[in-house]
Image (cartoon, rainbow, N blue to C red; front, side, top):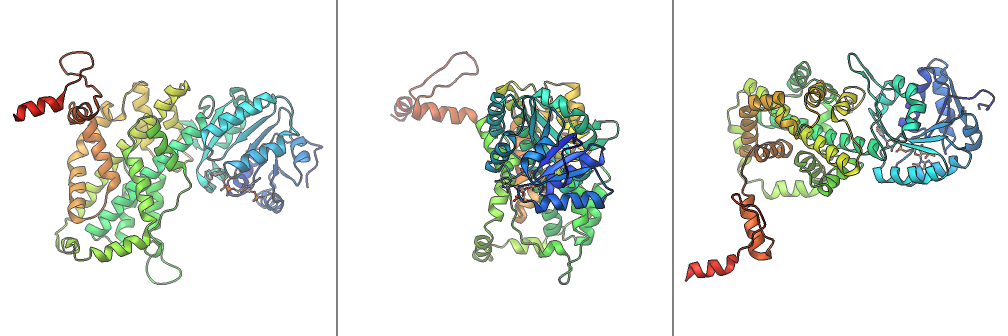
Amino acid sequence: MGSADTLSRIGLAGLAVMGQNLALNIAEKGFPISVYNRTTSKVDETVERARQEGNLPVRGFHDPRSFVLSIQKPRVIIVLVKAGAPVDQTIQTLSVHMEKGDCVIDGGNEWYENTERREKAMSELSLLYLGMGVSGGEEGARHGPSLMPGGSFEAYKNIEDILLKVAAQVPDSGPCVTYIGKGGSGNFVKMVHNGIEYGDMQLIAEAYDVLKSIGKLSNSELHDVFAEWNQGELLSFLIEITADIFSIKDDKGDGYLVDKVLDKTGMKGTGKWTVQQAAELSVAAPTIAASLDSRFLSGLKEERVNAANVFKHGGLSGILSNQFVDKRKLIDDVRQALYASKICSYAQGMNLIRAKSIEKGWDLKLGELARIWKGGCIIRAVFLDRIKKAYDRNPYLANLLIDPEFSKEILDRQAAWRRVVSLAINSGITTPGMCASLAYFDTYRRGRLPANLVQSQRDYFGAHTYERIDASGAFHTEWFKLAKKSKM
Ligand code: NBP
């Protein structure tokens, strides 16, 4: 075990997947690091890995006091434990040994209000606090994640040199880290990032479903299609791994592994929080909500199998097997539908972040967020560069859809998008994300909606009043009396 004779530059507590890999990444960038974990075997495991991976400067500690005292002042300790109560317990264990000006950085997927509560409690002890979103999973943590630190700016400055080196590096764009803003903004932005990730994954799954179920593409053809898409406008980590997945054979039997994976998607909560926040802030996020609903429905495996049996004579299987499909055309249409749907999904996520930023006075820079998502994280994509440029052109852009470049891209793709959605609906194949995106676009682009009727109904039964298109003020009409009179 390490001694406190030579002080480490930084400490990290919590050595599961993320903590262990981030600690090794920090050490590899030349910053001596002390590590600690409640279950001490993980400390020894991390120190051993550091030795095997090139004698990296990692020192392990089995007790919290010597761990804290082994770090140079002002001490900075990254905590990477399960979000919620474990973070509170870890902070309690460590903070008793910390001194004025020291700082805790929670790198977990934490609810942003917990971060704000902890920042306040820590400041009463003269300690600093940051809530830092870390994206990129195991691989990102080890070789370069996207980092979203929010909270104390002073604390950020104490660790900026480390974060700039540890984060993913994107040529011409810089390290994938920036100071996000005050309070829980880092966690909030990471939460919406995850919501966008849900949307991306759902849209890709729908593209797969249409190509497989309607286009009858084999796994090998799907691999080629996704690999080809990854050379163009859809180039991204998720498209790349999707192509890979279609090439993996099952090592426990015949065929491909993807076909043996149970069609049930798990989740850890950040997607649900994103949709809840969208509702709280009255921001429409239908694509992200559709992706969450799809995960809920996927969980009802037994019920779905039962329902499939009930509706087996519904006639759709005949449509699927008999319809003629021009494969090349379908593949091209689906690519365009996926891209257009993705624009709508990102527009929703960005507008959610903006709404929260306004509510909390965080002054978040949307273009800068797109920049730090270009590398390291799960949603990394060339597409994010276009988003950054859109906000560079106009930081106050009301919606990505009306940016001159995105509006043109949507218009160029809308015919293909509508063809794919119509084909899917008529074939009984669900494309909830693509449909939600298209409905978002079609609603947003219309100068007049049937909301006049809904408002009339509200005034009819609840005297909620309405505004007029030709005069200002609030109006109320005795609709019932007038209707009765008109019937006489
Ligand atoms: P987990 O979320 O699986 O948490 C395991 C860690 O929490 C272990 O170090 C464990 O210590 C510690 N812990 C628990 Br559980 N209860 C504790 C307690 N009461 N006191 C002290 N420590 C406690 O780890 P992870 O997957 O590495 O994720 C860490 C954070 O990063 C989470 O917030 C996660 O949501 C987030 N994140 C994860 C990923 C990913 O791909 N896994 C990606 C991005 C963000 P023990 O060893 O003693 O049980």
